[in-house]
Length: 639
Figure 1 (cartoon, one colour):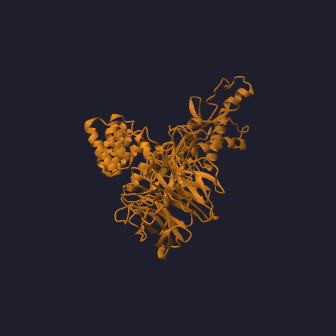
Figure 2 (tube, rainbow, N blue to C red):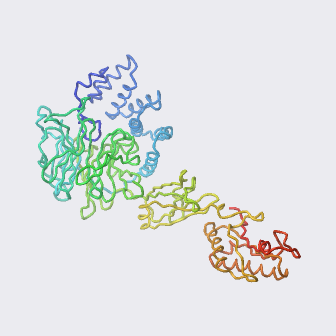
Figure 3 (cartoon, rainbow, N blue to C red):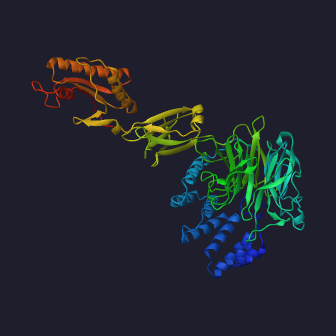
């Protein structure tokens, strides 16, 4: 027996409940968790009459429960054929798990493709990321794993640090409860063991630090700072099991404070709560449960607390963490959340995953810890702490080679656990109006300039990336007809860059140019040189700096400078003056950072190209003559 997910036998139903809805022996055995007998009866009944959709799903679930993944996959697929929307996301995960267990990875991809419009973006992103990691067939860390000598032939799981000891849950034969003297291995109890040399737990005994209780007590978590122990226990009323109106007994979370006072923290007769964890850094209390807003099976939640009092409604950790599968056993160490999930792309049943909490706007992609910790079976209840010489931790598993149903294992590792990733998100915005730019291309390149990842922004200009850690990364935003943005981070900069969104501003070329005299020119306010002069004044420089900014945004710009005068004065004098002015503009631009490849020409036309009727000999007012005094910065190439 394993205490892992919400549908385990620890949630007891009164037998009277089943009689109200049971229509066949198959149903009876299924709801009594006798899956092998349920299969036999359903197969017999199927030969006599068609099973209902619910019974077909029960049959598929029964195959899944006894680990007959070939028939489980066939059964789920047959139901899906009748109606491709009938499978819940939770059962869809079981179908994909079954296919994965059978080695049918191609069919998994095909089903995901066909259902992609119904699945969350986060789930597909998580799958792709972990598939890439696990396909490398290498351990992410070099774990030294050891089966503990305190394991029994029954279920031992959910380790927890407790002062200089360790607590764990077990239904071993010594765990008799007053309310269950006639039946062995029914109720769970909490045990304690001293930590000997090398962190090896020794001398396990029933834990006496909590009130005596006749029913389930399990999955403890101790907060040393507050000397407070959290754990789950059955709901009771007056010393007897308490059932809801449907005959269901759920599990509650309570705590024992330093004054040995017990109180319930989370309690509901119809909802079970599992695996308490308290994060001292932000006073968040984490747990597993299956509320109506669940993304599949059991999800991870937290509530905000203050001095042990709940100060918020349960908050779901969201679709990056919670999936159509079951997520359980949260544990936070050094800014990372560890938990277990039986999502289809893992190694087997429950696998341990890690996500970084210190990224902008949420969590990094949860990364499977690899074959060092995870096996083809269930691996869960992961805890870890610094040992002074690396890290030491414990977890539960029913992997092959164990002593009982679930065993406790220890591990040592020399460095931080799990694949280190670089996660960054932000928005590509227009420098003109600060609005997001749709379909801008964002690339991540490595130290050699090779493209590692490439995506396009959504309609709001948002983007997000995650990839395995690099020694250096460049983030580049581009869009046709726009400038580009590029920033490079070394490893130290990458750590900082993840803490806040990276917004990248680009500008459209059309916002910098306009049409004048049937030419495309840089958009500038009109400026004038002093009479008879070719000196770039501060007012002129202010406008020319806009040209420099345009070149910075579009380094490939090729520009031609044209300078014109009015018809006042001698033709030859005006010609020379306009050339001096064009040359003065060119020299200024080159001094400010433009290159000779940007400035492809600088010509003075004098009064050759008058734009009104103020030619030689014509009478014009001064403001009309002024219209002919102009300098244009012409764009000669197309971008």
